[in-house]
Image 1: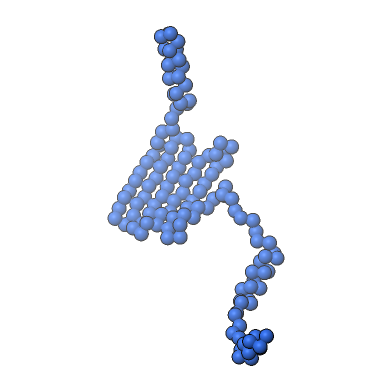
Image 2: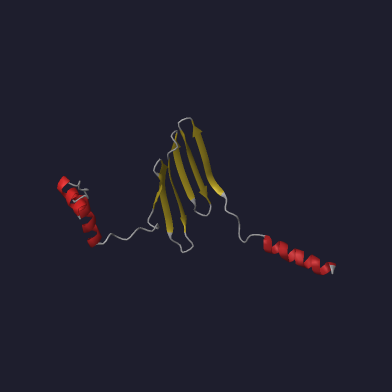
Length: 129
């Protein structure tokens, strides 16, 4: 019984080790100042990340990596009072607005709804009915 338990422990231990070598840090720098910060990170697997921020909490940065399909992915972003705003070729974009909807929006902008006030004669006519 002890031998079976020992064999199971060794097999479990062997399965727990990750495959391949872990990714190592090639370059890492962090510069924190009173007026902001800068941070850079580069790993052996090709992941790169850079960001900088100011004293108001606004952050600009980018990161890139290679996807499992072999595609180079680059994302740049800004995080400020307007929120997180990423941009990159791999991010989905909304479809274009149909022409009919665009025309309707333009018409609505040119002809805003104005609520009419009742005249005295209209009010009197409603009371009579």
